[in-house]
Length: 138
Length: 138
DNA sequence: CGGGATCCTGGCGGATACTG
DNA sequence: CAGTATCCGCCAGGATCCCG
Image (cartoon, rainbow over all chains, first blue to last red; front, top):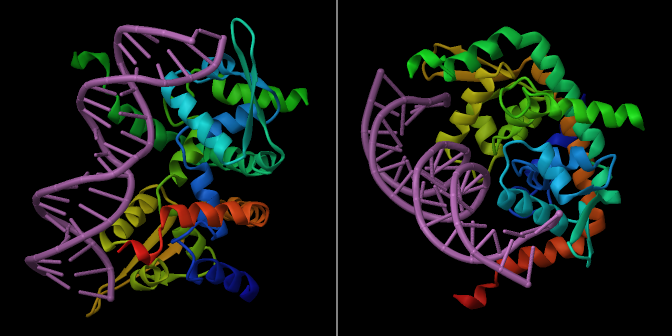
């Protein structure tokens, strides 16, 4: 496993790493680190969606935050924004070619999450109940 | 691509999603969302490392934050902490079997980051220079 | 050596109201 | 419909000092 070791070391030992965005890992992490970005990309991965369609799929997000995350993704060239100057306005969001390269990552994350849940379901439920005491407390 | 679409919808439309940790995507995102967790797992993916060895590989992290991220990863069963009660103390960190399942995700992220840099190198450099004005300003 | 304890701050993200 | 505008709480994360 020496090649693997070397690769990992190289990535982070380069002086540019952690400082600018030219370390592949740091950059990838940055591009995906917004709280809603992963979900947005996940939704757009197989469909063009309008603003409200995305909003409907995210039960607990505010309009402001959704807009912010969409703008950030657009600035990073991961999604495209199509504005139709009609009345009422219509705006569609579409994943870019580069954005599509993230989908395999999301698939793996989904798969990993599912495995993790299988193994630790009981503990996850226990944690959940611990931080969400029953109604009795009221 | 209907199966794909269904799968994605199901993940987030389930009432549990975004609310508890039982949505695979939300959970996976949570487990990896710490600022340094990805790098730590990356380093440990092929090696057992001591505390200071990890620290040396992260130029800009404080001891407190490294400790915090390590504890969080340990609580989530992604790494193990081995304490040798010697003088001076020696602590080693090792990735767990479940943690190892994250490595393919990191490999993909690294690959994606590299592709992204190839395509947008100029823009990334421009952004970097914009937020880091030359010494002249002093 | 490998932390813990404290204090502090930026900005992420939420709530609510308004608008072209 | 698809956003702004405004206000604000919170906490991840940083700086600094101390310790067994």
